[in-house]
Image 1 (spheres, rainbow, N blue to C red):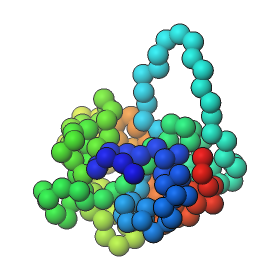
Image 2: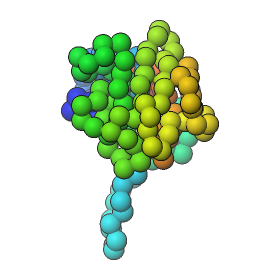
Image 3: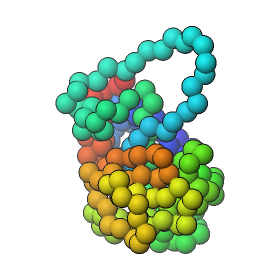
Image 4: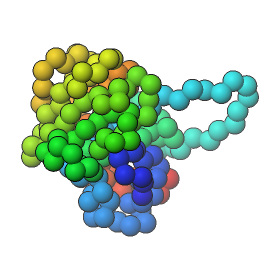
Length: 173
């Protein structure tokens, strides 16, 4: 479905659910996933593109105002042997979750999953980690439905089970 630690497009994830079913995808995602749009530099000049159309009531369950064509899902899953109880998030490929964006530090944040919540702390990043729009200076507990900001990028926190259920109802994109 994807390269270890990096994100996967919402379209690819929805199609994987349609092709493989929900259980194998849930194993890949772990208990939580971050969903957002990572900014890319727009090319100058004319361009032609198509858009994925999704029923608004289902689309809003994934992320209000989210562009499904540009939406990326980042599973919060431990992928490295370093620091076995901590999920490392940042720009570097050595992290468990790699988000390639200039405003995200090489090692940006640390996450500890504890049941149906997780604790996030900033790892000394330059551009900050935000919970609900407020810069955090100490570990903060988050759960599904919260918004997590890393640098200039915002993400919806999802329970992977609920995200997979919504994408299953949307079907192949």
